[in-house]
Length: 163
Figure 1 (cartoon, helix red, strand yellow):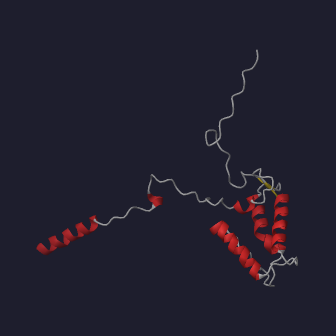
Figure 2 (tube, one colour):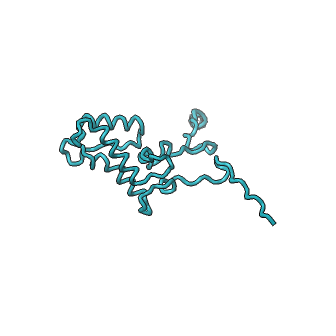
Figure 3 (spheres, helix red, strand yellow):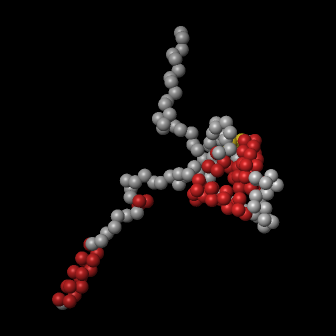
């Protein structure tokens, strides 16, 4: 009987001690982390918004990608080698962390050409341009318009009508 009481007491004591705090996602008072903290899936395309109006057009994307490829193609052969690709990929990881899209030599010919360089941005643009108008608006990029009172002042009331 005494041994049974000691075992029961040991179990009670073991169950009461050493509780750790629950992980952050289980704490009701904590605001959930924004999974788009790096800008979401369309962040890689925003840098091509030349006029900074929040809408990326296909023309802006094409012009930006051509300029970016030309800046990396130091030999002007229309080809990036493995070392250049490694440098670009490291820069993308440094800037974009887990949302980085690495360059790949898809046909394994030792050269990353313009088509391979632009595959991911063009593909993403086409996926997000749901209405196929050649423009990625903030709404298509997953950015909902601000509601009155959410960071922007309410519009001024209209003046009373003259009688």
